[in-house]
Amino acid sequence: MFKKRTRRELPGTVLIMKLRPALFLDRDGTLMEEVNHCHDPAEVRAYTGTKEELARARSLGWSAIIITNQSGIGRGFFTLEQFHSVQDELIRQLGGFIDASYMSPDLPNSGSLRRKPAAGMILEAAADHMIDLERSFMIGDRNFDIECGRNAGVRTILVETGYGREHLDCGSDFIAPTVAQAIRIAIGN
Ligand SMILES: [Mg+2]
Image 1 (cartoon, rainbow, N blue to C red):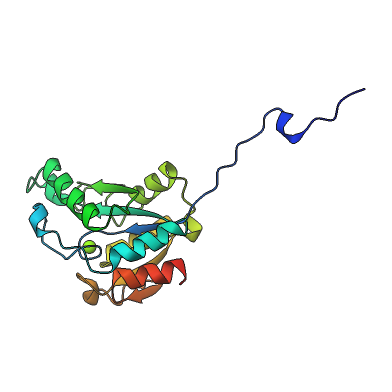
Image 2: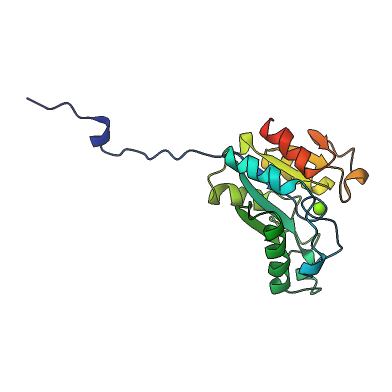
């Protein structure tokens, strides 16, 4: 008599990992006040109310991932260490509710596949963190943030902070006054 095989014993079982939705977040002018080529942690001011919304999003199963162009590094305006010290201070002010950061030091018109508006950093993050792009959002204050989101196939929200008011006609799916409100739109409450 053959014993009936249980599902567990089937050969070649594929482990199915559950994909999570993500908030892909621009940094300057979106999560923190715009400072031209910010490289000093003393100049970091995260927008109020952001930390609380990130905490809520994470408790609902969302990942929060920073996607930032930093051509100031490529131009030699500041170092990678200075970038990291700014990043550490921002993440501290955001209560640590950030899962990962992706940064492009590439110059404009360099043909970079990572620098926004190219989708490279989002696609990299999605692969690294098992992200479901269909349920994800890109949130930013400039047209190239919105284009980047569109190129990656995620929904987009323009915030009115930073340079946002200059980019209201960029064709984003939504417009929100602040990143806190953008996160509320994305997570649906
Ligand atoms: Mg920005």
